Every structure is written in structure tokens, then in C-alpha cells.
Amino acid sequence: MSRYWSKVAGGLTPYVPGEQPKLPNLVKLNTNESPYGPSPRALAALRAEVGDTLRLYPDPNSDRLRESIAAFYKLKPAQVFVGNGSDEVLAHTFLALLKHDEPVLFPDITYSFYPVYCGLYDIDYRQVPLTESFEICVDDYMTPNGGIIFPNPNAPTGRPLSLSEIERLLRSNAESVVVVDEAYVDFGAESAVGLVDRYPQLLVVHTLSKSRALAGLRVGYALGDAELIEALCRVKDSFNSYPLDRFVQAGAAAAIDDRAYFEQLCAKIIATRARLVSDLASLGFDVLPSAANFVFARHSQRGGTELAAKLRERSIIVRHFKNPPRIEPFLRITVGTDAQCAALIAALRTILA
Ligand SMILES: Cc1ncc(COP(=O)(O)O)c(C=O)c1O
Image (cartoon, rainbow, N blue to C red; front, side, top):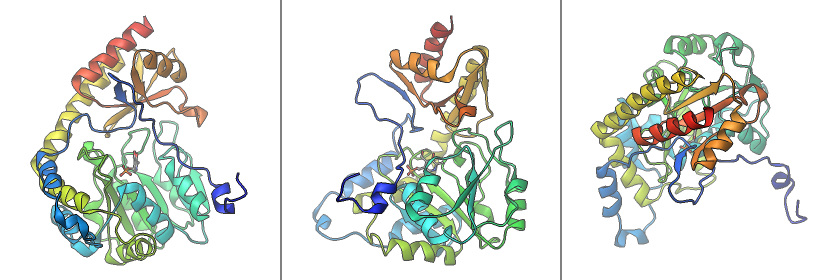
């Protein structure tokens, strides 16, 4: 801690993102990026934005992008908020909608940025344990709270929660906001977007980083009742009026409009995931049922720390969490191309021999 730091800066425990190693020829299966490129229409829209208009500020409200997103989900633009990655959308959500007297609830094993936002904004929180089979049990959330947030499918487990269970939670929790972080929903879980018109306390958060192969562009969005969106806008306009630049707004809108490319990408990942799961099972791994673009797998005889290190020696990077201890045996493996997954399986076969 430097004497120049504020107490806030000194007291933070920042999020640690998955590493982005600068090594050649890596099989990079650690941060759930898409192994395929973005929509060619998105790339063309980005290129078209290079020009004289860059001297002008971008649209602070990202109207064109919000219209595309609204049309995609059959919602109104006033029900859409956009931000610089869903991380920024989530940050504003914690401050605008989840900071109350009662603690915000989220699973004990989940996206590790949630407690970081609570630390940043001084929000009380309570972590609700997943079941023995690493599932979210909605009954455990039916207690007084200042809000509820969980990813569906959950990360890093990949396990989905059914829409009927989410609706049961919404019915019993009308007094505080329920945030469903659907970063990975397009790979096989049921989206709660269709419930937005019926439940004014529901906020659904999405990202272009996974199923639209645009992690480098940094775009996320939230869908919910116009009153929830207004709260997010109030925080955004008290922080940065222009979080999305001209390139981003144009490229993201084109990516959303290219529905066929998006559906093709998701289908490819889902097909590769099925092969990866059965190959891992044949090597003695227990793989949690995944509706995401990653799988969470543990080996019956070998620890996660050891396996991750041995894969790394072979230039294959997967994500491994030492904490909580309950998930130490697991590797979180991003679904790559068929060739990347085959390289992973070949390496594991040698390591386990
Ligand atoms: C559950 C979950 N939510 C949100 C994000 C943030 O995504 P981004 O900021 O790239 O939109 C991630 C990133 O990995 C995630 O795993």
C-alpha cells in the first residue's frame, strides 16, 4: 500500500482474469473464448467505421445497437442497456440494483467477480452453497435478501438451471432484483429473456464475448424492465457517458444482426462439446453436465493441480481453481476446435498412461 493510495484502493481485492500468455502455438482452453472468428459482417462493419467521423464522439446511448438487440429478443430499446463488456454491465448492476440493507445472495462456487464488485461498492453479501452435485437449489435463496445473482449456466461448473426453477424463484422473490447472468446461455441452457415482460424485478445479462466470438470488442448488455434499465443508465452517466466507441457500436450491431452466423457457431461448439465429454469420460473423467462452451471435469485418480501443470508443459492451458477446496480436483476446459480438443485428449492420454 502506497501512502498516495486512498483507503478504497488499498482495501480492494481485485479480480484475477485468466491469463493471456504470449507464447506461440498454445492450445488455449482457459478463458472460454470462441475458437472461431467473429461474423464477417461484424468485421466489415468495424472496417467501415475507420474514417473522418472518429473526430466525433460516439452516440452516448448506443441507440442503433440497442435497437438491434431489442429486435433480436422482441423487446423494446428501453428494455436494453449496453456496456463495455458484461463485466461493466454487472458492475453497474451491483451499484444500481443490488446495494441494499439485506445481503445480496449468490452461489459459493460461481463467477468470482461477484464478490469483487461487493468489495468495490461495499455491498454486504452471502454465498449460498451449491448442492453436493454442484447445482443451484432455488429453495436456498428464498430468504430475505438485497438481491440475487447467479450465472445460468453457472460458471465454472457449466450446470444449467431450468426455466421453471428460475420462474419459481421469481414468484417467491418479488421485492428484490434477480439477476440471471446468461454469459453462456446460448450453448444450451434455457434463457430467462422471455420472462422479462412478466417480472419487473428480473434482469438478464448477456455478453458478445462467448457465443458471438467478440471477447476482444468488449460488449455486454442487460435486458429488463425499463425502470431497471434507467437505474443502470443513471450509474453509467455518472461514470462514463461513452463506454462504447464508434467501432464497437457498429461491429456489435452487425454481429447481433447476423443471426445465421451466430447459430452456426453455437451449433459447432455444442457438437464439439459432446465429443469432448465422451472422450474425457473414456479417460476416466467425471464431467459435470455442461450447457456452456466449457466443461468442468475431474479425474478419478489424479488431482487438478497436477493435471493442469502437466498439460501446461505440453503447451495446453486450461483453467484450474485451487479454491474452494471442493473444486480443486476439477479442470475447467474451454470447448475449442475439434483439433484443439483432440490435442487435449491426446495429451491427457499420455499424462494418464
Ligand atoms: C459468468 C460470467 N459472466 C460474465 C463474464 C464477463 O464477460 P465479458 O466481460 O467478457 O462480457 C464472464 C467472463 O468470463 C463470465 O464467466
